[in-house]
Image (cartoon, rainbow, N blue to C red; front, side, top):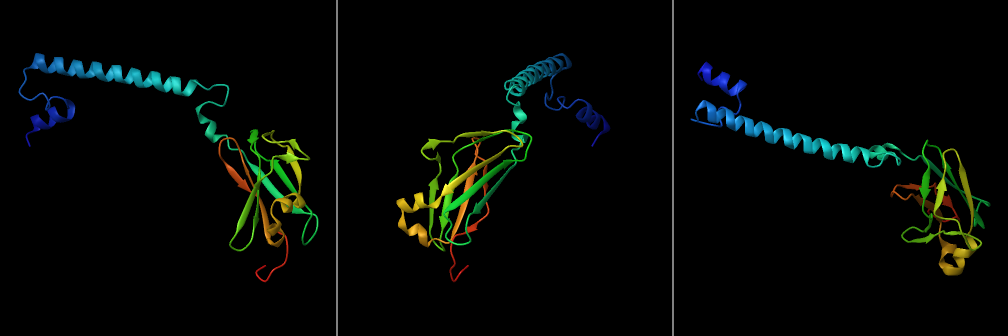
Length: 183
């Protein structure tokens, strides 16, 4: 390859594109392309500025970095066939959490039953706003679920799933409800 063509290709990348054009027309083509690139750059910059500054008060664009750290635990009052399960949700992070109603799951080997826990004693507790460093405790009576489905007495494990308004989900430890050959 000739050195002249190499220099033209490296230092004037649009020079090869314009082909056999004369210099004034080649310069005009370069000016038009440069103008279009500047307009495109300004448009992209304006859109990026709007995107990054539209939600200043709610944490901005980087709100997905504000991770909510929750610890969910489930405890029982008796060793087998507990009457009351105590759910504790502790916010360990720096940011507040907007929690939906938790779901309690009773599980056998191949079957599951899920119930949404909205509150206690007929009072709505959820959705719940949990500030950093605060612990929420809810006592869940198993007798209320036995009224809806008598087969739940024969289930072996229980677990609680908690989700927030953004869709993140946490689960508690499994609690053994009764003895079986499997457990």
